[in-house]
Amino acid sequence: MLDRLEFIIALARERHFGRAAEACGVSQPTLSSGIKQLEGALGVLLVQRGSRFLGFTPEGERVLDWARRIVGDARAMRQEVEALKTGLAGHLRIAAIPTALAMVAGLTTPYRARHPNVRFTIISRTSVEVLTLLENLEIDAGITYLDNEPLGRVSTVPLYRERYHLLTAPDAQFGDRDRVTWAEVAQLPLCLLTPDMQNRRIIDGLLRSAGGTPSPTLESNSIVVLFAHVRTGRWATIMPTKLADTLGLTDTVKSIPIMEPDALHTVGLVVPHREPMTPQTAALVSEARHLAQTLAPDLVDDPSYQCA
Image 1 (cartoon, one colour):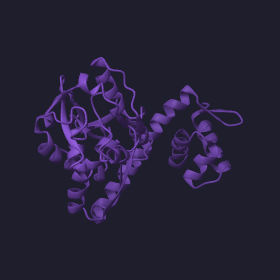
Image 2 (cartoon, rainbow, N blue to C red):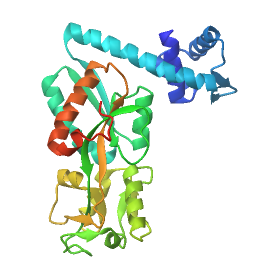
Image 3 (spheres, rainbow, N blue to C red):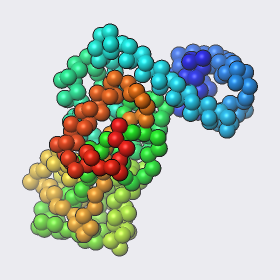
């Protein structure tokens, strides 16, 4: 039964029978047969079939939800038994929004010091992709915004509040200031993240509320690309304060707080809403709580968050 539930999850992820079969390491006829056997056992049609995958039936969507829970619990059970035998080991997969990537080391470095047999994969994704990967059991945890767009069925640990700075050349417009307003920043030609990034949607909203019309002269899904352009001394961008500090300032880059309003958004760890957690995930949540005590102690006991 478990392998057939894995087939359903893979099909939801890949939206294609052939790719789902490849992801599961089986032939396409084997995957199709397994899904049909599951349909027979449950007595309902799960998949809308045609010349290609057309989606799930309403019954299929419910079975998919249960499949994710059951497979997730089975994986958690195996990890816990293995940890009891050999200690914490294995592979921890984390996806983070681009603006939070620099903060991941604050979690993984102390984690590895305590559990040296765990290896990591860290990938950069949009906030929507982080939640999708988590739902499809492709990652173990994510780092994303907690207070701006719906999160779904996850547990959270708030890590820090994101504030915003203008990064520009000292001799550029407003470059001699010690603070600027969003209305002033709205006047500048900026390089920003692409619109699929939640950070960009937040900034667009702030610029519009200040009477501006976001029209960046350069867009990229890479923070590195934006920062490299700012370092030429001929571009300006808006970045979270902590990220700007991590990347490091040079003689050609000045970081200026943006005020009026002093916009804040909370970034944190998201993990599957499951009890018990896998040992790896539980250890990561513990590290996240330690990190939050350092970065934003006022967030740790904030009742507005469903802390894991």
